[in-house]
Amino acid sequence: MKTLFKPAQLVLLACILASLSGCANFGGSAVTPGQSESEIISKLGSPSARYQEGNDSILAYVHGPWGQQTYMARLDASKRLKSYEQVLTTQKFATVTIGTTNQETILHTFGKPAETSYLSLSDLTVWTYRYKESGVWDSMMHVHFDRNGIVQKMMNGPDTWLEPRQESVGGHFFNRMR
Image 1 (tube, rainbow, N blue to C red):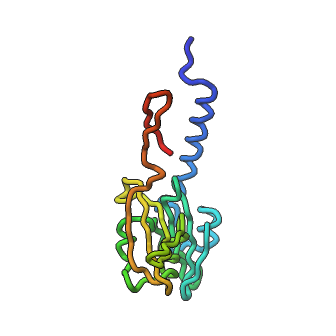
Image 2: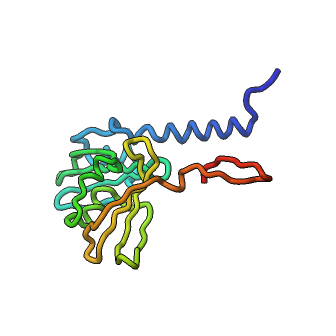
Image 3: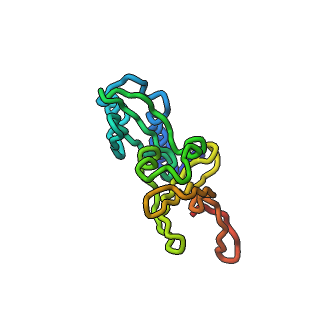
């Protein structure tokens, strides 16, 4: 009798299925408006970060491959859920106003960036967010801040770490991910 899978393949398959099942709570239906902070934490676990914005509290939940999903739970002054949304989206990035939006607003809207860098020639600090552009393409949004922490420009492009590339092994080319 021939087996379909080798033991190592079964272990890998089990790990993949287990990790996918862990994603279930990060969809939009896991929590509902009006729930208390303790109910949210019991369903979603400890947040990746917490922010305060006036009387509102924000709980950030970073998730997904390469951190491409960040869900923000916004709570009112009585610690009840006002909204819960995936914020790393093309539509949400479009709400940023060049020349007006500051670093604190970006942090409270999108959470911590995946990467930060500094461009010395233009004297700009760059926060980079990985996301799925239009829910499909592995992309990066680069938010550029001046010395005062004000957004000066935004640029998006493909996530180069997730693009396939060719490698030569023994004279043969293979496509692979980084």
